[in-house]
Length: 592
Image: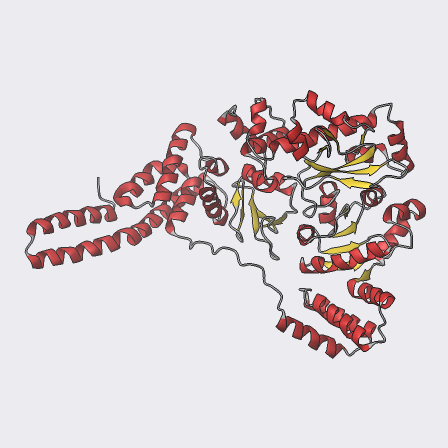
C-alpha cells in the first residue's frame, strides 16, 4: 500500500480540531477548559467522555478509550487509519497521494466507497432529463430542490443492471457490490441484478455524514414492496441509527427534544416545514441502541407514529427502551388515516406544531390504548395495566417525574396513589434497575504520570531530567520508552505535540494509557513565566520517585550488608557497600 508521508499526516491532524470533529458526531458541552458528553462506546447516564482542545485529545473516564482525531474516527466509524486520514484530509481541503491501494487498508473502506458511488449514481439519475416521472413525483409530494439536495435524494432507474454497469466502469468488483447490498445474486443461473429499481432513493448516513445504505420508495402502481431498504452490512446496521439524523442532530441537540417518526417522508416534509429537530426509524422497530443514541442529544422525545394499529403498537413498544435511556416520553395523536407527511400537507405546519405541543404522557397513552382494547372494568385487566405501568415508571430516574406519573396513573386508573407507590417500590425491590456498569478504575495518579505530563508541557527539560531518570533505573519500562521517543522527537522537531505523540505508539493499549494520563492532567496557561516553577515541581517529583524506587533498594542492601558482616564475608560486604554508595549518590543527586 502506498504510504502517506508523515508530514502530511501531521499537517492533516493539526488542521483538524478535535472539538470540531468529535462535535460533528456528538453533542459537546463546554465544562471549564474541556468539553463533555455521554460516551458513544459504552452505556452511561453521567457524561464521562472528555474532549480537550488544548491537548487535542479525547478520553472516556468510564470505559478508558481515548486518542486523537484519527483514533476517534477509527473507533466511531470503524475505518482504517488510512481512511480516517483521507476523511479528515477532505474536510481540511488537504490533498494526499491517491492510489487504488489506499482504499484497501481497512475492512470497511471499500464499502463506504461503493455506497458513495451509488449515491452519486442515483442523484445523477434523478437529475437526468429522461427521468421526469421521478422528479414529478417529488414535486407532487411538495419536496423542494433544496431539500432534495440536502438529503441527497435520488432515483434508481427501471433497469435490471443499470448500476452494475455504472459501477463496473469504476472498477468495483461484483462481490464488493453484493456485500454492500447494492446488487443481488440471481436465484437461478449466474449473475446479479440491481437491488433498487424504479424507486425514489433515500440515502442513509452515518452521524459523520458518510453514506452507509439506502431506502427506496417504489414508483410502481402495485409494487411487491412499497419500501425497500439496504440489508445489514458491516457498515449499515438498521437498529443503530436513524434516518435523517446526520442532518438534524444539531437541531435536536439545540432544542433538547426530538420528534420521532417512522418514515422517510414523515421526516422530510416536517423538516421542510421548519421542524428540524426530528428523526425517523425508517421501517424498523425502535431498539435500545437507537434510544441510547438519541439520549445523547435530547432529554425529551415526542413519538409521532402513524395512527393505525401497527403504528400505535410500535409506539407502545418504543416507550420502554426510551424510558430506559433516560428520556421523558410523550405521544402525539394523529387523526385517522394521516401520517405526519399528510397532516402537514393538508393542515399546515402551525397545526402540526400544536399537535406536538399537546402530546400526552406515556402513562395517558398506555391507559388510552388499554381502554380501547381491554375491559378495564375487570379487576384482572386493571391490575395488569397498573402493574405494567409501575414496571415502566420505576425506569424513570427523576423522582419528581416518577411521583407525577404515579399520581397520573392513580387518577386515570381509579386506584389509590399509595397503592401505585407501594407497587413501584415492590417492583424496585424485586427487579431493581440495573446500575450503569462501572468503568474501569483509573490507575492511581503516580509520580511517573506527573513527570510525563510536565515533560510534555516542557520538553526543553528533557535534556536535564531524562538522564537522571535513567540513572538507577528510576523510570519504569513504559515511562522509559515514552521519554526516549519524546527525546528523539524534540531533538528533531524542537517541540512535542500531545496528539502527534500518540501516533508514535501503534499499540491501542499504549495509546489509551497515554490519552488517559494526558486527559486527567490539569493544564493551565503555558507561559515561560511558569518555567522555573515547573522545573522546581519536576525536581520535587523526581525526589518523590527516588524515595519510592531507591529507598526500598537501599534498605534491602543495608540488610544484606548486616548479614554478610555477621558471616564475615568482607568481599561481599565491599561489593554491597559499593552498590549502596552508588544509590546514595543517585538519591542525593551527586553522581557525576
